[in-house]
Length: 198
Image (cartoon, rainbow, N blue to C red):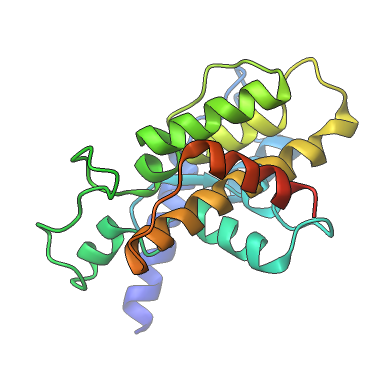
């Protein structure tokens, strides 16, 4: 037990030590030290910025949605690829429910799928904004919430709308899995609007 824990901490320290500091820094200042040490490493070796994870906990956001988003950013949702990785589903049964043939992963389900793309398009039309969306879920969240040129007071509203959108997409996915009922993207955007104003 102690050997595996020691190996984990040594590996983590080596990863932190080898991270680039960015912006031409040659030493660890207090700001970059906090940035480096507040990075979480998931089991799939993805670096997840803790500020994005901690940013989902807010009094205007229901706890179940915050917990869902926290699991989303850490790739801990029971998507088909995660279930197959844990040998709960066969590796041959990980295709997206929409029928695009792509394996259902967090990135695909919430950003890359035709259904989610359509929902995000409706959100952009509803809000009257336009941006080039990232294909990484954490970057997509940060990019959407902190849209350049918008006042700081709007960040919480964009955060609530983003979380409502991924929550509705997840609920739609579960409806398709468990009840075999699917909704049109125009219906989903209405659910996003309703959820974001609660």
